[in-house]
Length: 310
Image (cartoon, rainbow, N blue to C red):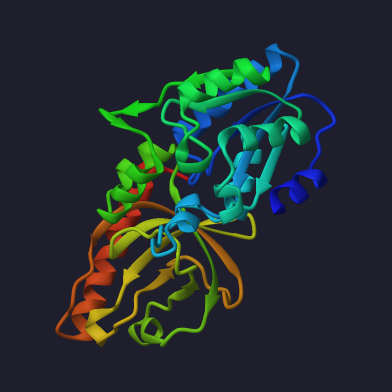
């Protein structure tokens, strides 16, 4: 069994208090849950651990479903570690694992990770057919000798903080709402690849990013934000869309750094998107587009000036 093979390599040396989930985006709700995990682990002299999965369960259970991710595995793992937990355990979510009962899965966590307790959200469920809801877990905890702590959700402006809510806000280009739910600016990561050279022709050389096709993206449009290069932060303008002025058909992510003059090809950039300036628009001539870009830059600088550094 693959999960058992993975757990054998990760066997714990001390008793652990665990939380379990995908934690896509590591948003405010996740971070509050983890803060409770750490506090309880400290009180009980246990090691705090986060169990997460390489694959989203929905992709395994419904292969036809393409669920865009907010953070890939590497980003998610880094963010979870930055929350100060003692251990981040990454397991493969496979069809075989999906067929395990809640009792079987928790038995493996007890055997190999020395789980003494679980800290979970109120809508949490695990095991075959999501049979292990909070009530079932409480019962299993009594039978199998581990504690179960239920942490209520975080609600902001009447909305429960969730990865789904963040994806919906992104799809609307509502970056202020995204930032409220995530607790930080939404970030994109990608290597700079050759583009069509349209930006250079217009006098605004852009860097085209090789973004994972499963990455959740904001709605098509122009955004202002910051780009991090070699420990330095630069103001940026990011266009997400199909470049209709030039008859484009495929969605691209291209970023313009008005104050940077170095060679970016091959570099990996991190873009923190702060605010949406406007939707994507088709211009009748390149000159009209050039005029609009100049105005976008002016407006973007004004916004960043009020926000300060990131």
